[in-house]
Image 1 (cartoon, rainbow, N blue to C red):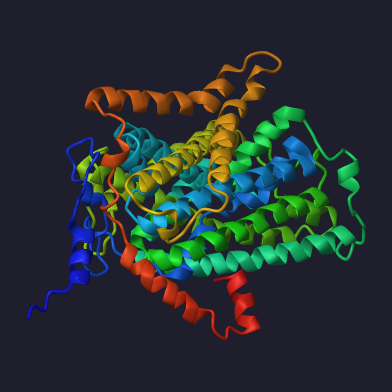
Image 2 (tube, one colour; image 1 turned 45 degrees about the vertical axis):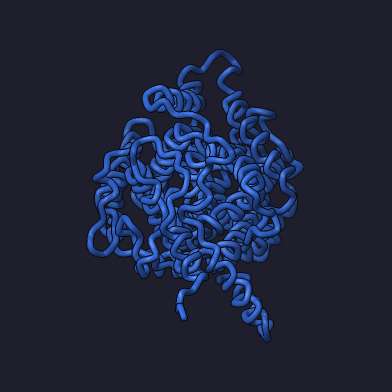
Length: 548
């Protein structure tokens, strides 16, 4: 009697079969998949992230130091209510982006995430252009974080005593060391820094209420600044700037799909992380923008704008007006510690994006090499080095560089989100065309296809109108390049790779739905979740809602 187990056969087939492939470079598609070899992936990366790591990485990587003074940038351009509207619309956009990602990445926790999915299910040339778009998106974020660090340090040490590039180099060296630690150390650092960040933000809300009501400073403010200078500023131009800023700040929520490849149990942990990360970020961003608009007028000359050399946080300005400028030092310390986790996350995602490009033959192969701790050292060093473009702030000032980086990063984010929606629509068509049922998906996107179409439309619309201001009061050629160069580069990369590699759109019935698929873990997940829901005390629920 044979001891042959058909379930074992099914699992082996699922993990080893490459199925139809759309690889465009001769690279084995399986190199993008997870290898069932303990906690080590095929290219040396390691599965070391738990559920709490995923939740707080998604949150901590999104909420950086610049949000504290960036909210002032938003209300300076579009007013307190205008900024709230912009952040709300982008929040809805991100909600549906995360729904699309959740459906795909839960079943396919593959290295390269939505970039590889686009190449596998739509066109390999799209994976090339989208992959590099996502990579330089994160490079601009790294540079933006270095730039933010120099702004924060200038609060204590004026730029005439210590040039901004000096702080950029100091922080570059610091993050170069921390980023070379293993994935487990990275996850723990992100978890605890993110917990600290949540605590500081909740404290920031309380302090804002005390300042606004006069409990600190003795002056009641209320909604004074919503009436004078007014709820909305600068019309459509102001909205365009705030939309870009909101996209930059929400950018990073999709990094959960990138971290799925290094998660111990993505089918169980990813849906939970997606839900918690979105609601936390929405609560944080809307709350910070709301309170910033209550604390200072949108016309305050101390707020960060492209025309200023530097800028202060609305909280710092409010403390100074309340006669307690020394507390601004505490605010600055909070912002600097917030910077730690967001910077580490930016370097992490940028390096992993480059590893995925290298693994698929879309970047030099040596970038995919890892050391014995599973750290992609070449990709990390290279990505961190590119962030040194922030040194440009030495001549122009960090505020103008902040404006440029926001425009580039925001436009690249719109493109990435739009094609996440396009890839999701294509995935659903392929899934059904190959005889599968929607009910069998371990995670189904809410309000599909309407939410997915909203993602595609709103992001294509925003990427073209975000630079509207360059056509006002004479043509601003520098602003035009900064706002629209990303679109040109994306198209050139797509057409160039398509012509060079002679790629074609992948037919529905030939698309690969085998490689990297992780269904067995999903079936285990549902029983696990049922156990977790039993007898959870109220204070545990509160703790999970706030932290993880």
